[in-house]
Image (tube, rainbow, N blue to C red; front, side):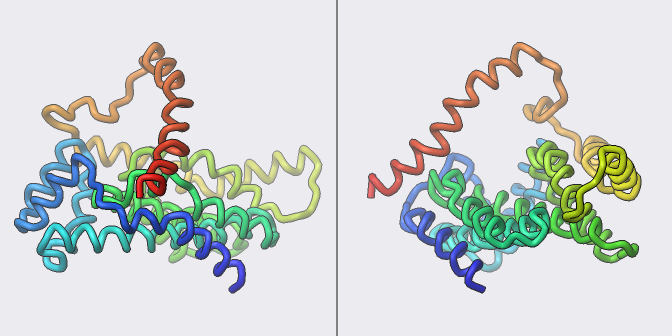
Length: 275
């Protein structure tokens, strides 16, 4: 309980200024107009055009519950704050298992997740709700993936829920790549504290991969379903398409550091200074 109190306190302290800002992004004007006019068909079409239909469903509850733009913006702010705290709690649950019960490490990991400045650097806007929904869903899937890996018995319900959570979360396409970066952490959580010789570790790794082929295939399954049932159309035909453009990839890495400094440092500092 103390660990959660510390993490939640860090999250609230880090992000409370974003609850007071009055900034919205360019897509927000379209989304707010469609919500207040009750035009879910336009929201659905907007996100379907570039192949991420489930994103439009995130805004469906706002149409009957938030009839005005001001109500939508206010509700979105508090949902974003609640999502940040939920993410931090899930990171704690994941970290305590990856660290084999080290609660200090888990609290530090949860506090780091709660304080991440990129989550509120430009204020809380309705467009940010996509992250507020899909990121907790992704972390839930990872947590249940770890629970599945830790259990010697077959747990079909937990496994199925984990796979569905991950499949839906991949609508936020960046999580497709992030998923594979966390697979070694899931494996490390599953092998316990005992020391193992390299040959034993290799055998455990092979067994882990064979036991969890369904999890490892899930990003590929999502992309296949996306290409088949949610194709990109019109001006979004090239959105998130696979292109081995090496010059473009190098240029993206050249922009990476400046972009990280802007979103992670300069913009978050500008919000409290401007108030």
